[in-house]
Structures are given as C-alpha cells and as structure tokens.
Image (cartoon, rainbow, N blue to C red):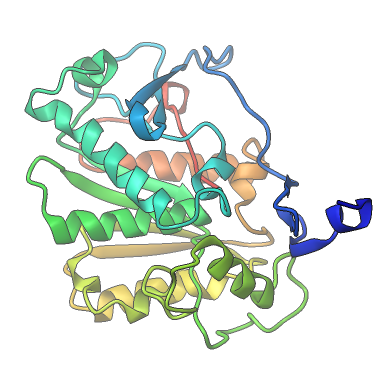
Length: 306
C-alpha cells in the first residue's frame, strides 16, 4: 500500500476525527485518559468498576470526601467523553445499550445486588438522575425514554439534565444555517449517519425527539436543559422543551440560556464564572427533593459526557 493511499481521507470531521480509506482513525479530541484518583481540592474519590466485562462495559464512580449513607450521589461515566460515541469502531446504538445496562446495574443495588459497596452503602437509589453534555445529553434523553417505556420498577428517575443536547432534524431551525459556528449544521448532518449507520435519517427519533410518537412516555417528571447563545444546536434545546410539553408528557422542563458562550462551555472551562454557576444550578436541581438540605459544591462529584 502506498503512502498516498494510506493518507487518503474517507471521512473528515475536522476538530473531532478523520477516518482514512485504509481504516485508520485519527482522533483529534477526547484521547486523554485521567485515571481514578482523589481530587486534591475537593477530596472527591473516584474508582473504576466493571459492569459487564464480557462486553467491556465499565463505569467510573465518584464519592464525596465525607459521604453520608443513602444521601450522596454517584455519577456513572465512561473514562473519556469520546468513549461514549466511538464510531466507527462502536457505532450507535451501542452507546444507548451500554448506558441502559449501566443504569440497570446501578439501580439493581436497591433489590439486593451487592456488587459495589459504594453504591450499596452511600447511594440514594430512591432519587436517581441522568445527565450529559452534547452527545451525552442525547444519550441521557434516549435512556430516559427507555426508563419510561420499559418501566423497570426498581429504577427511580427523579430528573434529567441536558447540557447543549445534540439534537437535530432534516430541516434547518432558527440560525442553524449560519456559518459563524464552530460546528455548522451540515457538519452535524454528516456526523449523525456516520455515528449511527442504521439510522432512518436526520428525522430519526433518536436525534429528533419531535419525531418520536412515544415522547409522552419520557421517564422523568423533571428536566433541566442548558443552551449556549453561540451554539449551533441552541434552538434545538428550546424546541425540545416545546415538543415535550405538547406531547402530553406530564412533567416540568426548564431551559436556561447562557449568554456569550459556545457549545458545552462548562466542559472546556469548568472553572469559569458561567461554568461554576451552572454547576451550582445543577447541584440545586439534583437536590430538589431535599427541601431542608443546602447544596455544598465542595461535596459534589460530577461526571459529564461530551
């Protein structure tokens, strides 16, 4: 094989990845690996656990510095944001299936599964939450749909948090046709069928919730959506609220817009003023069922998906 053929690009998703005709995948982001540790600032501990080793499904757990039995939250995450959407090696719907498996595994500790002592001893399994950033927010939505449709009695889902959710559709919406965004609509339109080869198209319910005839079955009564003013998928976040409410779903959804920010700003700049403000708002959302408790950001471990 010549050097020229090795360098021929089949799919070019600049800023994210390139796929070459010889099968080589060059990842431009999401290649870093952070091992489990104890955060020196917050004292939050983390560790990796195997959920289904036969299919290589693992999770990372987080525990506050001073955990209180049955009152602390544990956040499940893959080791890097990109690992959730590793097309072409692991195309969708694998990420949906793996996330659903992880949720069931965590929740099963309420019915006698003693696999993981951190969950058994410290997790409040009566109040579960899903959340994610960008593609991870898409996954959180679709897992919540599965919670509502399959009705596993031992999964208690109190709320869903979506940060700059990766939703789309065949027809442009709002300012999606503008070319001033880092990721334009035509880029995302090409990315979706690459990530999900079995998709029915850009109006697939997996990426366009408005096309889901079962949207009213969404498995949580509370949803918090964050959008960024300078994000190409901004309008999709507002539209998500609209279609949820008109579907017949019986719940409350709030959209918060952050001015002057771009896509998943809190992931890239978590210590910025807007990043910290969002963290505190999410903490309040997660603790909404604790009427007499106050949120302490130093006792809060967050795993987010990009």
